[in-house]
Image (cartoon, rainbow, N blue to C red):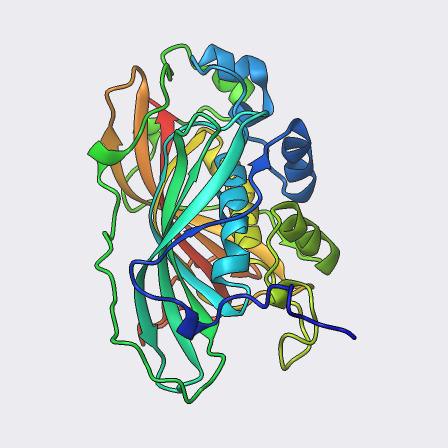
Length: 347
């Protein structure tokens, strides 16, 4: 007889408890294939992850892949336990990239539940987790917090005492981890593709990245499978009432980051993600554009290395006015992503 006794239905909201630690299954070894497929999915052209010679010229050991590859791999490990029954991933905070990931590194992820809050409808709740992805040497490659809206198994189940964690709005400059050996004093601006350096950017400046990419179901599902993200809403048309596959939020992040090359080609390394919100759903057929705002600037102790705090905004359709919020304080129509991050740039 058919049975589901051995299959994983995923955790529902009432299965989580504050303080719970989850060791996620299936360690994942990053390969050069990940780098190649990432470049096929996103129009990325950043010199450092594109060229082993460029990476060596700025003092890095090995040839690191894009930071977001590490993030996606680590994130994907958490999905079967945290967000298999999600309505949507809501936001990020306190994300730090602490160790560059190179082909051959194997990442394993652990999460701790740090908050729970049932929604007023009684059918869903928000789960807050702090996740850590470590390499085979037990070094932390990337760590982050996120919160996700998850279905309840039984709407009549009692609500837990609400616990909402107090998360930092910004990763402090002193807490940014500069990769060992990073040195931009002999930075090759010709190879990188743009002349703009730290002093060329002003706080408050906005940059229209101009280019757009139209989303397709095939590509976003390929990306989501690449990171072994099993969330039903990304694949199964029966998982949403409208019958649409929801684009994985990480796909929008990587697309916007790749588009930001045009104007921020020298923002070579993501150091931290301070905050992030998927402000509206995206679906196949949407055309994604991006713009950035310089929020802050800081010096680092590494030779020739500065840090820019940037707001990266992805929009459905191009918004030449680069408007984030309307007069009512709500996100402007078409805004898909509001991402606040630090990047290392040459001085």
